Figure 1 (cartoon, rainbow, N blue to C red):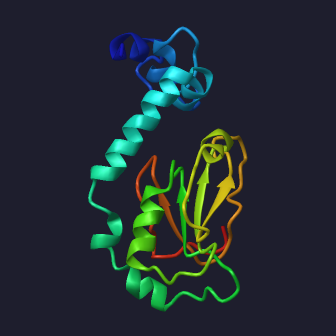
Figure 2: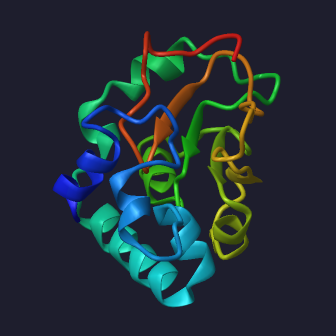
Length: 167
């Protein structure tokens, strides 16, 4: 990256526009990371391979997070989601939740990612529902509402106070 040049362009101030960042400025096509992946299959395949390997070798969060207590207080009788994995790629984190809680109802685990990513997902269970959603679109609204545990594969974990209501 070229931080000194970029900072000089911004007069050493934090840009207010997300599209004005050092990463985008560094490449001639002026695209963000995920835009670059979408435009170039080689970048997308490289990123997908990395995410697959990383997910398989990291410690699964259901091993250290008390999902049992959350599940005991969850009402899934109306078909509500228990966990929504935003940007969950191929669903490895949801499969780990399912390993810990094999009796979860069908559709209570939701894999939410970009349409192209979701289209390539091959899951061997109907307990995980896929949802095409582009959270990078301006003014996007989370399509799943109510008490649910959100976790994000592409950023930090979103737990808040264990549930997020009224999104």
